[in-house]
Length: 166
Image 1 (spheres, rainbow, N blue to C red):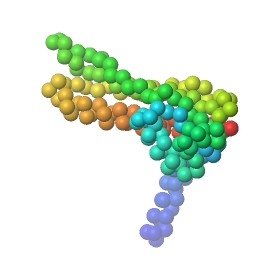
Image 2: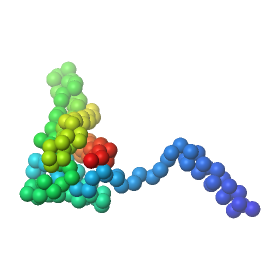
Image 3: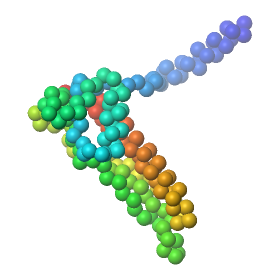
Image 4: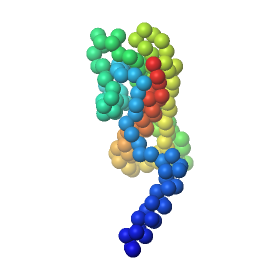
């Protein structure tokens, strides 16, 4: 009897989730089979984007510039820009708070030049408190915050790539 009651309760609690459109996140399905990333060498965001696209499993990532014409789409970018802006200072002029900003502009085209996604800029920012007495730890914190911003931008780029159909 207790097992039957438990089964009924579990089934009843699953109904609202099914009705709201809830589904587990899956690997993105792209409308193309291969991509070439025209990104600057040494770009941390570019490295993470490559890894995420390779992990998708259903997409060939072309890394050789000589094979660029073989790709279905080409993602072009000048790279990311990191900014650190002073937001507030103490009465003595010491920095109290920064805004960390990461900006990534890109566009997607076919190798023939047909534009699939026009120049798009994704900007993410976050505030960080600062104390001169904790400068080393605050610098490490800033690097971790930039990494979080970068991961968020990479996920947004992947979602936008998944919306493209050639």
